[in-house]
Image (tube, rainbow, N blue to C red; front, top):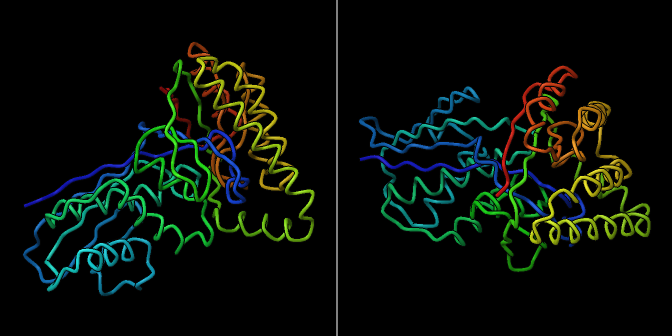
Amino acid sequence: MNAFASAPGKIILFGEHAVVYGRPALAVPVTQVHVNVEVLDSPRAGIFIHAPGIDLHAELNTLPADHPIASVILKVIQRFDISPLPNLEINISSTIPVASGLGSGAAVSVALIRSLSSFLLHPISDDEVNTLTYEIEKLHHGTPSGIDNTVITYNKPVYFIKGQPVEMFKVGKPFTIVIGDTGISALTKESVNDVRRLWLKDTARFESLFDEIAQVALIARRSIESGKPELLGKLMDHNHSLLQELTVSSPELDQLVIVAREAGALGAKLSGGGRGGNMIALVEQAKAESVASALISAGAQHTIITEVQ
């Protein structure tokens, strides 16, 4: 017997960092990249995990309990009260770059939870997948917003405010985003913790920056829903300058943002935790390839062209 599940990547369009402090953020799935998980019966005793992308070939019991993949498997086993443990082979492959703001960790958790629950014949709702994945995100990000697990679980554009019911929203008219990867791995946890320290030191200033980011996210949602995505360009530029004030940009991200604008993008900003990882640019579809190639020439390691619809 075998079971298979897949989960997409994601990008945050607006609102990163401020979302941790109760402000709204917009995120969309990126189906051009994904995690695939296959669960099979094993002739060997134990649960064997193969994730060649991160050079992992191990039996579950040899991994620490807080290992990102082991913790998901243990949570599912605990959730369904499975005993004795079945003998399994788990194969994980991914085209989502790690630690680059595309939701790689949450996508692994979502695909792993779904494939295990299917293999174990324990159906699981999207809401439960989301809750379990958020628990895993907390282990690895400290105080995550919950946006990664939400947009990846439901595979729909999401307007997200921490602690409030998830709102899906409709895209009035499709639009094209070019994603440029700096190739610099940056842990979200570190930039989130740094912003928290700065916020504690100068709460009034940072609250005011978060309020401005919230306004941008709100206007962006209205622009997308009303079929006027071209208005997002200036909003992206403004959001990027606010993220620079939060100290979460980097020279490499700033450079790619400038290059994208000069190559004809309508606007550009960093996306995700910052300090490395990805930036995004709003482009007219006809200019997507030329903006992508300008980013590569300027040092981007990879680009992805995605249509938001």
